[in-house]
Length: 455
Image (tube, rainbow, N blue to C red; front, side, top):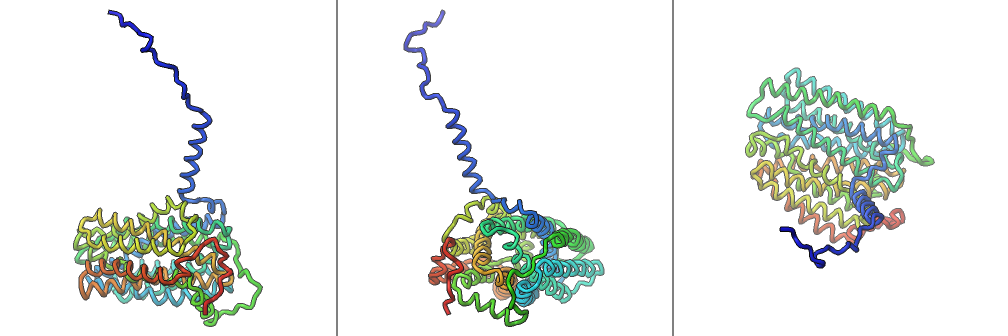
């Protein structure tokens, strides 16, 4: 039977026809918002910076293989978390000394030349690590000595590189350039440890397989490091950008430290980072925990923090728009401590990796703010020394943290050392950051150079 159609069954004509122009505008608005949140890549248009970033990122993958292989090799020889912690101590003093003095050198010589020479020194140490493994020396003392030399060359190279960036990148792009640096570096910290973990592994004894793994790790590092050497060769000459009167010596180092001490914003940016790394860096515990809980799988533990940093870096467009950078830095470090503390209780690898990744995301945010405050606050004639202090703190702090965590674990347990360190970090940074009001109220849009010393 045919269906009858009544008049009230006929659909009414549409009156709200979508406006094509409005739809296009909505898409544009959404894209604009996504771009504002995504990683800012504008510094990549600057050729010297782009080459520097590529060289740094490529070589960093290799250096992370070495940074994992050395402590794992030490643990395989001695079966001691304290000895693994001593790897950090071996690198601490050279990083502090050569970081400070290397920064002073960077203020009076061509920074390109200094960066190239220091990079060549670091490359030579990597070759020495390869040779001692091939020869089967098996000496913890030799490994610690090579780490000390490598840390010194690293400190000088990093001080020079950090002082180079504000000279080849416009001031308003410095936060974006720093974010790119940290993000690319963290990609290396993901890829490198995963490769190294697969190559070296953990066991209760050494074997030919593990010796081959160490050999491959150091060999890959040596090959990839040539990218950093190439980028240094291609940099333009970067002589000191001031009229003169600058001398090279311990007095210039003291002047740089005095500059920091008299300015609470700079002083606290270093102090909170020291607290975060010394109290809450669990890295020296990874070999023991990996063996005890996760069947020797240390690669994911070493990579986890960097995984979170990479994810945070890829969605970091908002970082440069935050004005109250002092309190943002405090909040980020508190989040770091909390995530580290909880991760120490995890007995499932995926959960430990997830929590350490959260810590890594917070660390990326804090690192960008620390570096940006430093680079935009100091005048060019001070930037080398400021970067020297930055490297001494940023690279030396985790090494001192290795000593603290390894010693605490030897006296108590790995779990107590791991968890208590994270909790202590939260408490110390929260109290100190809030009490130092100039730092807590620091506004990045204010006239930074106008601030006068307090003492």
